[in-house]
Amino acid sequence: MNRATLFHRDPREVPFIHDQVRKLITLADATSRNVKIREDDDLSFMAIQFLYKQIQHAESILTLVPRRDAGLIARTMIDGLYQLLWTCQAPSERARLWRSFAAIRDWRLIQGRLREGLPVDQADMCATDARIKEFGHLHRLRKLKTNSLDPYYRTWHGGVTLADMADAVGRELYDGPYAELSDWEHWGVSGIGESIVREIDHATVNSNSDRVTGQALLAAFQCLLQTLEVADLQLSLNIINPIQSLSKGFRETLDSFYAIQPQESNEA
Image (cartoon, rainbow, N blue to C red):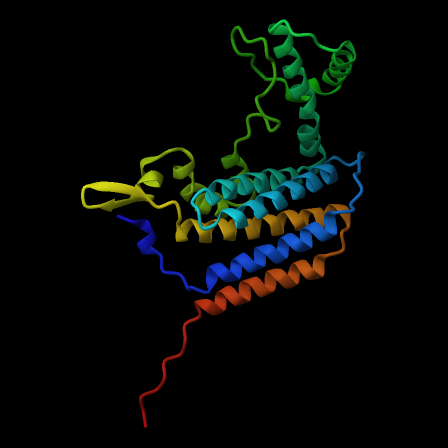
C-alpha cells in the first residue's frame, strides 16, 4: 500500500509553508547576525549556536524539497529542538553539561592520537587535563564498562534518550514526523519501498515525495520558530511581536485551507 495516497492535502499548502519557512529564516538570520557571544551564560551560548544550526538546516530543506532526503534534515532539526527544550527545563545544569562536553571530546581526540602513536601538543594536553579535572565528573559513567579505558558517557546528555526528552517536553513531533521519517533514514523496507515505481518487468526510483515535502517543511517551520523563541527569550532579541505574527498567520492560513465550507441551501 502506498501511504501517500492515504493523505489528501490542499495544493496551496506546500507553496505556503515553503514561503513561511523562507520568511522565518530571513527573520532569524537578520536578528541573530550581530548577537554578541555571552561566554558567561551557557544556555544563551547554546541557544544561539542551536539557532545558527537550525537556520542552516532550514535552508537545506528548502534546497532539497521535494526530494525525500529533505526528511533526513527534518529529523535532525527535531532532534536539536528536543535537546534545546529539554535543556531549558533545567537550564543551568543541562546547558553546562552540553557546553562542558567539549572537554570530553578533546580528551577522546588526544587519547586516540596517543594510541596511534601520533604527536600531541603538550599545551593542548595540559589545557584538556585542566578541563577534565573541572568538568569530567559531570560526564562520568555511573558504572564503568568492563575493560573500557573511556569512563565517560557517549553523549553530553548521558543516559537520557531523545524519547525521554520527548516525554518531558511533548511527543507531538517525536511520534509524528520524526517517527514516520525514520524508516527512510534507517534503510527500512517501508521507506525504500515507497520510493519504488514499478513498470511492467522492472522498477525505477522516484526520488521525490509530496508527503515528505509537507512533513519536512512543517518540521522546519516549527523547529526554527521554537528555537528562535528560546533565543529571543535568552538573548533579548526583542522580536516577540514578529514571531507571534508569523505564528498566528501560519496557523490561521493553514486552518483556512481545511475549513469546512457551509453547504449552499437548495431551497428556493
